[in-house]
Length: 189
Image (cartoon, rainbow, N blue to C red; front, top):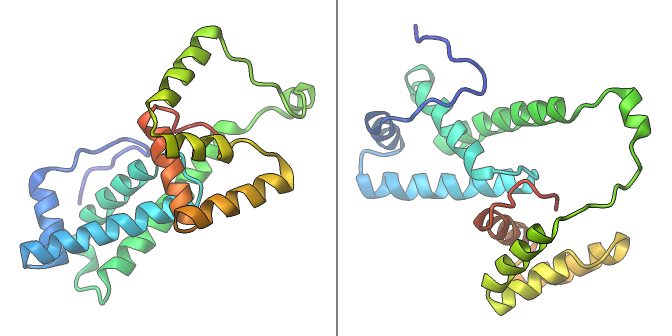
């Protein structure tokens, strides 16, 4: 019986455990790495699609759980499907935790304005300008258009942008990566 780990506590994945996971995927090293990369790509895309602020962290948590359960699951017919099932549970847990963190006392909630205006200090604005200057011209244009409109225009603009980068998921992934590069992973989309 393994020791209990508190929810949300991050266990470090040891090299031996990761090696065991790769061998579980395939006895051939190259095939195992290809399968790992394929699973990683699909699960990160899934988490991005679900609107998770840090899809890479949720992928890591998924792999931690899968590695911990390799001995219990035995010989699965589809390893990717098993990982995806664990990922859905990790997403649900993350969603519950985020909802709990965002819950506010109803009395306080009534006092909040419907659409509070964001306030940025001069230093924050200079930092944002510096970050935007670091982007390539095409990425700068995408970010500008992505955040430009409101309502129905916003939807149409994002559809048009998505067509230009290879689809809606590709656009979401691109925006997630841009936010992550500059430490804005928790900003709203």
